[in-house]
Length: 212
Image (tube, rainbow, N blue to C red; front, top):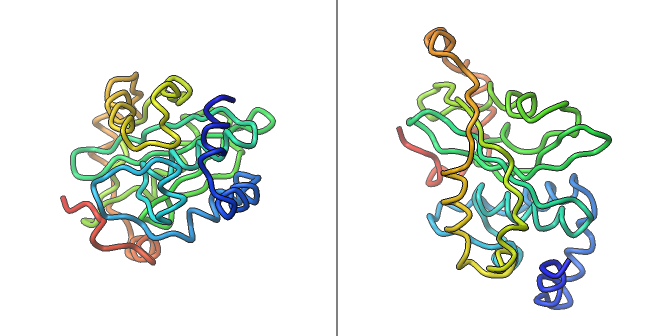
């Protein structure tokens, strides 16, 4: 709770009001949906996302983890791993009645919220598979990391400072990874159909799209 208290004490009155209103996973996702997707390569801590009202998937996942923590959930994130022709994508995780859900900020419409209906993380990650594609129309999701609990970064103040965020990114590069597809499965993948392709890119910030 020490880090939560530091986060709350750093807020002004208006920011405290905003945070107090984000009292469910769905409301946290709705907030992230209102802010523009960042095409910048910089990381923003949760406090800075709240103040700048902009963020990419890394920023959004950390923001969601912080706000989930504020309402009693552990601050967990997971990284979904594509092939080398796409960006990875971070999720903030939460669990209700034994089932996993996720919150995310994405440039793609289909890579955001998931209801807490998934029995395990593999099921949850696989729910993103058909919507995880690049601008060339290739389905690119290949694996995911173990969940990372951000309390281990509390001593660096990840909720209120941008300085430790590179440490989190580096840790995600090193933790255990799980593969989803065999080479034979990859070879059989069909391209994304045009309707799904166009639907997923509704409202996208073109500058933030990975160019394979």
